[in-house]
Image (cartoon, rainbow over all chains, first blue to last red; front, side):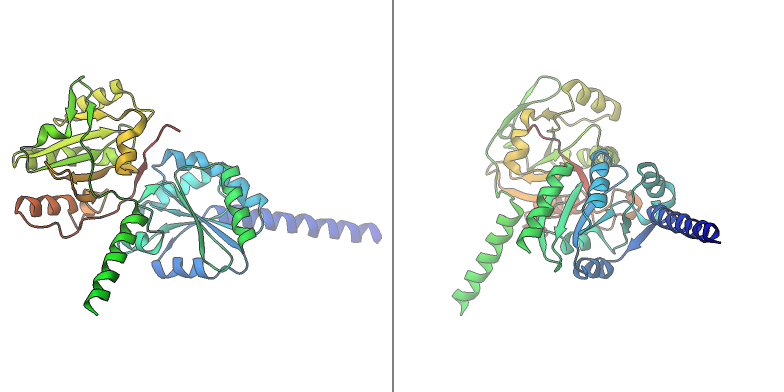
Length: 169
Length: 189
C-alpha cells in the first residue's frame, strides 16, 4: 500500500515536471503580434519584475549571436522578465520567426510588432534610438526606463545593467 | 510672453538635438573610394545637394535597398544631386565593397570609412542611413531613411525623395529627421 502510494506520488511528480517542461517548451514555440497599446501595458504593468525588452529581427546576425546570453539571463535572473520584440513583418511569423525561435530554443515571450507604422514604435521607445538593431531597453519594476543598450551585448553587460536597475529601485 | 514661448521652443529644439545626438553640420572630409580615388565633400560644391548614404555589403536591410540606391542615383544625379556611399563597417573590406558594387551595378562612388571616423562624426548608427548635406555650408538638411518600408510594396512615404524635391525647389525640408529599422554599423572598439 505504502509502495503504491509512493509510486502514485512519483507518477504525479513526473507528470508535474512534464507539464512544466511542456509549458515552457510550448510557450517558447509561439509568437504573438503586439499592438502599441499592448506594448505600453506590458511596459507599465511590471508586477514587481524588471523588464528587459530586446528588439531583434530574423535578418539580424548580431541579434542571433546575443540570444544565448539573453536566454541565460532569463533563466538565472528571476526578477527579470525578458521579452523579445521582432521587427520582422507580422506575415513572416510562420515562415521566418517561428523557425528562428525554434532553432535557438528561445524560452521567453516573443512578439512581433503590429503597429500602424514603425514610427509608432520609435515614438513609444527611447528618443535616442534611430532603429538600429539589436537594441535593448530596460525598465524597472515601476515601468520606468533605466537603460538603452545599442547593438549587441554580452551576458555580463546585461547583468550589470540589471543590477544597477535593481539597486536604483 | 513671446520671449517665454521662444525660449521654450529653443529649449525643446536644443534638447531634441542633444538627445538625438545629431550634429547640425559636418566638416569637410576626404575618404578614398574602392577604386582608390580620393573623394571630398568640397568636390561637390557645384551640386544642388550631397546625399551621403551609409551602406553595407552584408546587411540584409541595406541590400533590400540596392535597386532603390540605383534608382535614386539615376533620378537625382540628373538633377545635379551628388551621391556618395559610405561603408563604415569594420568587417567589410574594400575588395568586398568593390565586388558588391559591381554585382549590383552601383554607379555612385562608395568610400571606405576606416575606423568609422565619419560615422562617429555624424553619429551614424545603422545601414542604410542617409544624410543630405548642403553643397557649400555642409549643413545637414535631412537625416534618416530612404522610405518607410523595406518592402517596396508597403511604402507609404518616400521621405528622401520628398526632402530632395523640396531642396531642389528651394524650399526648406519639412521633415528633417526620420527613423527606420536597420543593421547596426559595426565599429572598431
